Image (cartoon, rainbow, N blue to C red; front, top):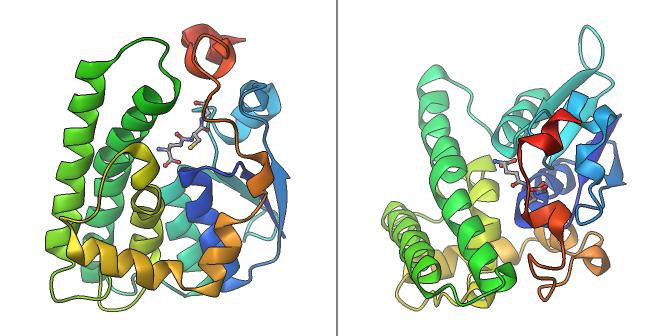
Length: 230
Ligand SMILES: N[C@@H](CCC(=O)N[C@@H](CS)C(=O)NCC(=O)O)C(=O)O
């Protein structure tokens, strides 16, 4: 049995998709991020960066195993189930490239764009333009990778689950996919999967409001080192 610490956000969806695709037995623990559940001591022992997603696998060899960071969780689940992941060292190197790329490029750039589009209190013209450009740049990288391919690798895999969620919500971030035809076709292909639809609808009613600005929510949007020390 796996405990899954989740909120309905792009990073939460990645793991929700993998759990739905593989059918691994799990229990979803919904985290109230605007309220600050992620800063509880018990949760920081599982996820030291105080962010979802995280899992605890109670059935791991040698006792319970906790894993934080979406890419690390996807690799762990791929290895555990023998599905959707690399099977040789050469493949592992290629998977790591695309998982690290998403976690350090596409994800943070889209996340900052989302912050300045949805939550920043005042006019943020410069910041919006900066992160829109960076997110579009990452879409161009993905588009080039997908030229002549249905998926990031030959078959549907955790590399697709990793990159899909931010591409899925590009439009509400003010980014058109029209110029990225390979990404558009890939996004449709993935969105059509029943497991993906189930995952992105998982506790959809608990999505936090796009109108809650940084002024209104000091827990979520005005963090400092103090949040991690307490
Ligand atoms: N690099 C991390 C990013 C995780 C992340 O940013 N999670 C967000 C939700 S999408 C979060 O927990 N935010 C709560 C907070 O910042 O306090 C991953 O890929 O797992």
